[in-house]
Image (cartoon, rainbow, N blue to C red):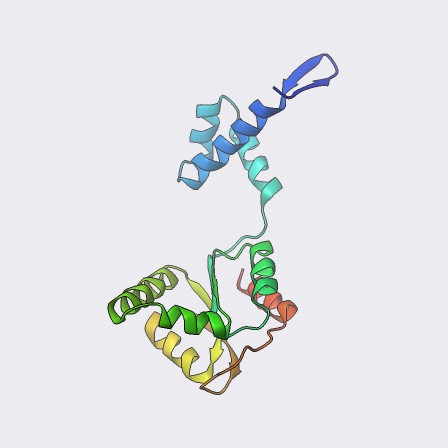
Length: 173
């Protein structure tokens, strides 16, 4: 137990953490703030304030997909900070490994799975060649914000300005 004294009260820090985790898990599972408050023996306004403390952004869900990017880790970190819901970025080397390490059926199934996952998001930011952007727009038949990395075929990693991408993410939020 991790006990903490505040005035005349003794608090169990672990219990508080567990209750906060429970509240967030219940909310992300679809329960209303009122239902969570009732289950935890608190008020709805507390659940609302708890969510506000951890809020990164409001708005529709965003997916970020792109290849071949030079600064993959930097972009992933920034996208996580901005609350992007789905991130799938690859370098040129990873893209070739993705293709070469699968048979035809495995590759087809994995690509179809990725398309289905991207389709679930109302906003998709796609980093790629001119041809790949047009293909994504046709496949997803929804709002695709394309950032062209160059003319097709791209054969090397391209640096993407993380602050420019951050600005786009914030505008879509």
